[in-house]
Image (cartoon, rainbow, N blue to C red; front, side, top):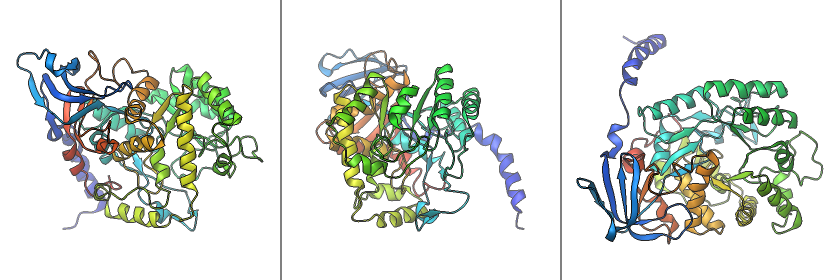
Length: 481
């Protein structure tokens, strides 16, 4: 006998309470002992100092007890030992633009350069994303904009309760967006009072950060920033209608993506509170060492405004990039893989995104050289080629291409994010007394940054997760769940 749709839902609902009592984490845990030592390992501690060879990391009750030369390590009696010669340990990655959603069907929804009503719909992936982030070495992440806020909060609570594997989450509220937005799942603000109301509501619901979006007005942004700060929370922005200097003056804490793709101050016919065309082209004309860009950098640094690098999402629109990886396609659902390959094939050979990305790279190097706080994240959106976890690793590789050393890049992806979140006393670097968030990597990313992809075990508060098992568990499912 066939069950009706209602009957199927009823059956599933009766199973749900029993399912929530079990934990999905146990099968992925490879190390779960109170005291252990990772011995004879190379250490990149996240502070920017050179890698140290033949080190021993002693972990006790979820924290780093000691770290130093293996030859003089004081290893507690009964500690479980892991000898890992030719391996490297880095701090857990702090991903600062890491969504729990994914553009799984962009090539289907965007046809002829147009999006049908009610707008672009983005797929939430609350099952696969946390697993892939953790497998990629991400132990803390900011969601940086929510489309299904209650799902994001549920994922955070389940991870915190050890009901499911994933990073610790700084949950960002739904986008603070003006009209017109081309996303079906975004609210359109109708003024400063509405912006204030949204900030207050989502603070009460448990969100811990905010993100302003492309069509917000200056008055709405000002109200949102002031209210977020009243809650002692931070606000970042992917802007267009408001220029970077305007947002700095209003007190914004962070900018997403970098200025080449989001700052419209150099557009000649820019009108107040309206998002113009040609922002990227206007930046191509700028000299990074010229007075105008240097003035912006000084403005950012003097106001302690961070910038989040998201190079992978732009690379996906560069002809022939990135190199196709079997692990990426294997993780995608068949429909998502087809959508991505179709979108990738549509990238124009004469696209100028490569030049724009190079300009953005040069800006990020200059910004850090001037004392700016650069953060890192993948942004798994665009044409669907950027996946959680894998994208975080690719961001690190691209920052090396930009001109940073591998050790500097790992600092950007770990310590800098911890500083911005105000958690540098607990995470972001490796030192005695800090939480044992560690990534065990086969190889030496300080000499070959692509070794960053060879993650074997990810330790979150001293509990080790098998990266391969996490990846295998989502095979063929990214874009579905």
